[in-house]
Image 1 (cartoon, rainbow over the protein chains, first blue to last red):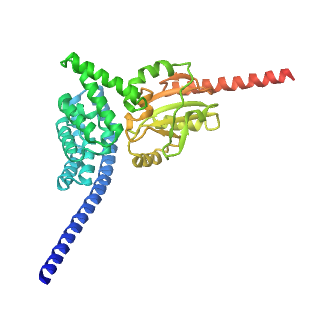
Image 2 (cartoon, rainbow over the protein chains, first blue to last red; image 1 turned 180 degrees about the vertical axis):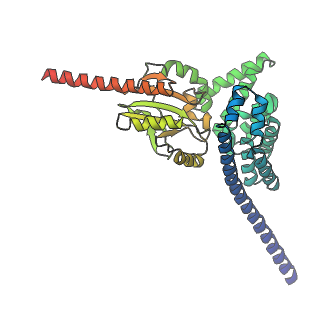
Length: 262
Length: 113
């Protein structure tokens, strides 16, 4: 009896050691991702700087004037674009950490740094298989049918409607399915009718959701954003998280600049 | 883009003028680094973690970046998508209008006395 207990204890000890090891290796992987991202940022900055330098050379100007595409490609060919190199590294980290948050982070990086539709479709399916509940889907909904095509895309979107806990993502996925079906000329009248009804339902029940804002935008531009109209207020947060309203700036000439650092 | 905006903000720093951004970057951490690097001092709304698909640009139907609206001191939309020199001219015109309106007001007040 004593022996069994001791054996059990040893087993438990073993088990706890191995979880600790797994935790430690995940922590390592998380650090690895941070380091990879930092190295990538540095490599990319170098790459962009060398490109800019090349674009200032006489050779570049000459080739551009002559519209010599091949020459231009050759001129830039010597530069190492870090994207494919780092893509392989992130891919390896993802493979070694299946089902973990580290895999998720790696795959999201891959999706954002690759233009190959086939690769991105595979990444998206892997994300759907193991991370269907993720919040990140909100920003990816538009890309689902783009990478997967309408049919497979709609299947994935339907799974999001069913499995993702975020109401905003459920509404967004329903919207993308309906839009895809409406645009699909080979679909039957009935499918089109159902899709339109779905859009109407979203507008009626969730008027402030992103899909509803998108549907209402053309009318909003026509009725609220024409020259001579008082601009509608914008209420939100600034980049430091401090509350800010456009109407706070009444009494001043204002340039509103929709911008991004890209 | 940034150099022009920097010079506009600097030139009009003592005038009743504000450049207000609506920023559509997803990653705030990276963006804060870039704000420092590029010396971007003007304030911006944040369009949220959805980036270009965020609520402000979606509501306003923005599909191209940058998109510009220029408002006078009464909050009226007066110009759209003026960039570079044209933006400077538009802003100067609206500032002059504003000053003109104020002087007129003062003149009238003076005449009544």
